[in-house]
Length: 486
Image 1 (cartoon, rainbow, N blue to C red):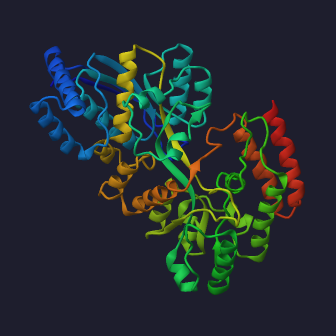
Image 2: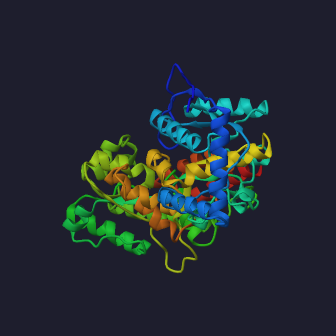
Image 3: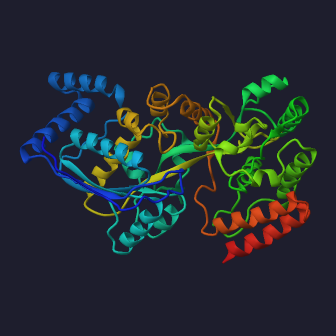
């Protein structure tokens, strides 16, 4: 089969701000195979699909059986598009991501030679400039990588498709996805995107230091009282910090998890106000201040001096826990430490109504409302292949996060395509996904970045003893609600 590939690389590499990756920039186009080859392959695909669904003929049944055996490497076989389709797909990321994604698209086109895909990629900043320009010109790609920061905006603008009809039709197979992994990006009941990789906030700890201190290892059902006793026990036994931080991922996300476990969310449904009692913020700040004043967790001044993984207190052996982590950042910490560490969820509170730990997508994939119905179905097939094909995911190697398909995630974790450190994070997310719900605040309001800054400002003033937790909560609520009401 003859294909022509053209690849244009950009003159500079831009730093990717999400998922911790820097990206290159380029485009490539793969030409269709000859008409005869495409027709033959399309007929073969149609016959295979018919066999799988009807088993009407002996020959077709044999083909279906062979296909079923072959797809031990895949968890889905969507109905093939018999019409030719020329699609465009774009994403941001590192050169590693680019190379792997291109290989997967080539695999897809080998399987469906009647579908061709032109691909474009860039770093984070250049990517969004280009997407905005394409959106203004009604020229968005058929398939593109999306962010939780922008998906709501494009959904409300009517520029991306609801994927649920393609799920209902069997083109996108979500039978091996947890409800939390699917629902995290529903907007007003519509499924506008799916996660390309999941992550969950966590606490990473050093089992060797726990053993040395004679302190029990944390478990998935541990409580805040257990956490307080743990950091105290570590400090008293070893003379180091029990925790090098406090559960404050992205400044306010520790509090967000806490209020979620009590039946609240950070924002109300229309994201015009905060949606939890002010007293809960007071309580959460006071817990941290008390542990810091006792010397059981690192003080704010010490934390602010740590700017690299190598300087992290859990890496230097000056703390047994680092509780300000996202699961997909833990591999780098383990690499810096030069050994395996363990992950555990945020603590629970007696009487909580649900887990505070939630699943969150590191990035998303969506479809543009463009082209013919056949183009849209072909695009949905590409999405299904990227998300659910095991062989494809052996190439992607969970670089975007833990696959949402549990069978794919398990296969990757049990393979040699990811490091032992990465397997620890994959297994953690898989375990959490059994209990966690979709993050109600995954799709953030436009003011979320400013609200993070406001929270951090008040939080730090409390930790440095400049104001009380009560005053901090009052100030934060006033400023955040004013922003959200605009």
